[in-house]
Image (cartoon, rainbow, N blue to C red; front, side, top):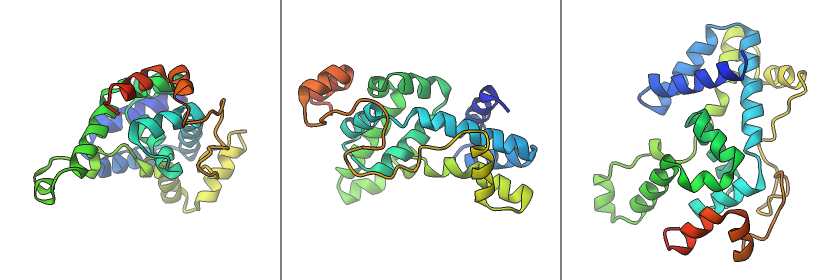
Length: 211
C-alpha cells in the first residue's frame, strides 16, 4: 500500500460509514482482509501523514481557533483533520493559516461553542453531538487493532515494523504548553503582531470578533 492507497481507504471509510464507530469498524475490516505487510504499510503512511501536522504554527492555529492549548487535544485535532480527507488535510498541513477556512472546522467550532452556551434545557434539544467534535483519537489505532486480530501479536510489533523502515511517529507529544517538541519556528502566542505575520487569516477572524 502506498500513500494513494492509504488516502483511498481514509476517504472511502468516510463515505461508507454513518458514524465514527462504523467508520472505525469499516477500516479495521478492510485492513484485516489485507496482508500483514499492507497493515504495516498503512500505519507507516499514517505516521508520515500525521507527522506533517506536528508543527508549531498548526498548534498556534488550534490555540486561536478553538481556544485550547491542550497537547492531547491538538494531537487528536490532527487525526480529525486526516479523517476529513486528503484535500482538506494537505491544505492545512501546507499552510496552517487555512485552518480557519475549512467549512468542517468552522462548523465544529460554532456547533460546540453554541452547545456549551445553551441552557441545559436547550442542550437536550441541540443536534450537536460528540460525532461533531474536532477530535478523532481512535482513528489512530485501527492498524494496531487489525494487526492484533490478524497476527495475534501486540502493538509493539507494529511500532517495530514501522521503525524498521526508518519512520518514527512524532506523536504522542511529550511537552508542556510551550510546544517545545513541535517543529518549525516558535513564537509568542501572546504577541498580536506575530499572529498577524504568521497566521494573517486567523488574525483577521480574531480581530473581527468571530474568534
